[in-house]
Length: 279
Length: 183
Image (cartoon, rainbow over all chains, first blue to last red; front, side, top):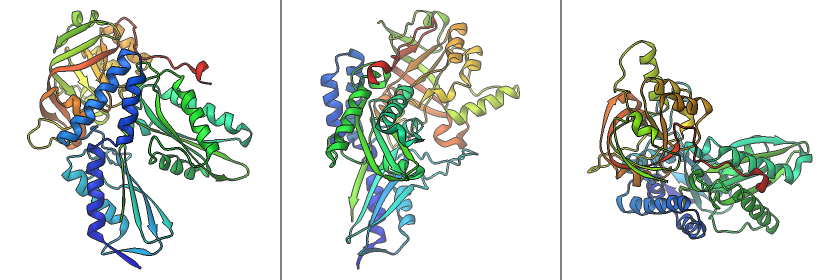
């Protein structure tokens, strides 16, 4: 059984929080640059120019890319043949969040849902654990901003509605969200599982690289179909019109109940801040 | 589409000339307030008490900045989504607020209030928080410190880059999604 020290986890999490919030991942940058080339509308080009300048400035000054440094969301894969010593893994991740959000001058956005009192340190993080074969601990972090998260939805379709029903729901959701979630967005689509599982896998899809291709060619084709359809909406960067309403669509699909067709649409803003570490 | 340089406090004349799509560089003092601060401002109004800043000609910025690192007046400071303040904006316009600054759609009540009271809704680029902070030269918490990022701040801005999304003549810049083309 391989042992991983508690301090290693805390340090790695803190580092990820700071880095993700100050360095736009290269795949996102590439997509924004590509969109800037392809757009013909001056306002769309100008918004994309500002976003790229913002990314440069953030990297240089270490100011966060966005003042909304998100609720800290983690997907954690714990290998069967490793264990963390010196602390509880959930608590260590939260400790890393406290440290990273404090030292990185990141905004702490966690609050009581009813009193709205800020918890003051960015925790508790939302953590999804999974057990996997092997002796590695993989921690993926996402800074999930509120503006885009608010535009997300879960629905339970009738099985008869099928792919056409899924397509219609996703497209209408993006249309209704319009300029609110800071387009161009990335859309995570979770199909199947149960009510809560659809949402969980929809969000997990957002951790993929924007320029990757789904391993299943049929799903890859569906992602492309949805991406093209959504971009025909013409919402464009910040809703000012243009060809780029989404940068990418990521579908995650798992088996579901005979009676159900769960569907989740998780909307992510253009500031797609995420990091992964393998310990 | 025209370009204007305007100063706070904003006047009726400032607002009337603006059309959706115009670019405005705003200089002067603006005030930050978002969800929790608006609720507290309304508690004060309902109790007949004075607000922490003058609404006459005011521009309210829907923002909750990240903490200021050493050597800078403020952290990242881009706009939050405005619709959550739709319930508050009409009354503030009726009391003298001239402009709100945010991102995303406004409802019909806010648009009607802007027509009636000569108000404007400016968009700032969402997710460009680091860049926008460069136009904020000073920031001071003036009320509700306990709200942390949601406290009301007086922010001195210089040539803060804005886009007129909704003007006081009923004009709107946001495009209507083309559902027919997409479906």
